[in-house]
Image (cartoon, rainbow, N blue to C red; front, side, top):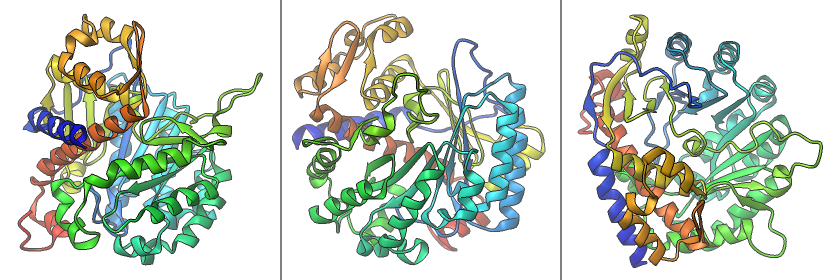
Length: 447
């Protein structure tokens, strides 16, 4: 446990230092590097109801507000095109991207007409896994990711998801019915809820396997400051001391034993074995290797939409969290950038180290080409710590791969990194005008 606590503290302090938001007067993001491949991230910040554990930019849904917003998204997409970008991949996150299905489909269709997009990934919620939605998404979306979080009815009630999205039994049935519509059907889960027992976790993993989903992602519960109080009120105080045991249970159930059904795609994403298998003469399924943490495959990416976070070159940009200000900016022909932070060389090395290890392989040859030094020389403390902790399975001239302990240590680092990113979101959220602050927090809230 000591190694995890030390690692958590180290990543937390490092994130505080380089994930600070500074006001910017930039009106557009930088143009593309012709030698790099990019993905486009698109944010849809509307939900029918707001979940207590979510730190992403999101607002209560209202149809007129959402329609105006989607129109702005399409305009911003064309601004990105004018900068010279092309994309092979589109990721639509939220919020709930499928909240207004006709507008989402129109936006995806425009993206496909405008760019060289081969695969689209979109998030959704269980109540949208119905034929009317699935039939419209089929062919437009290769990977659909549904937020389930747990198949335990007690936990669903704690999260205010039982009444909103249906019982565990209903959700399980809907996931199974949705699987044939997509090249990849991902089920998003959360582990280490305060009220979760080992038996509940085992039932969650068994339910995922039973669902027929081709992919699953098990996130550790993340108590960032923005949601810490709402989490404590609804599901209880988070206990990180159980996290490793819970991770070992789910990891072994999915990938261990005599006949494992899943294999690792990242430290916390798992793909079903038969889904990934490509027989001679067959082409790889579109979207087969897409995962929620798209930064594994695309280190740099522009993001459009209110609350979108762009990472290009040395700079990380954050779009305004105000939907009203976002629409106004796009209407005036400029992007809605409200803040940025610039990474120094050491920050960029730390970021690459974390993201490639999260993707289960650090390419040492690429590292030397990009940074002009070995990873050992660039990050001596990080390398010494991870090596001493037994995190590396292979560490040769070409690559670093991870042991099972190393995968969990990367989960710890990613958890703390995302808490740092959520703190960045809190800085952007603090600038919301009064009307939108009340939508989120109610009048008189100190947040």
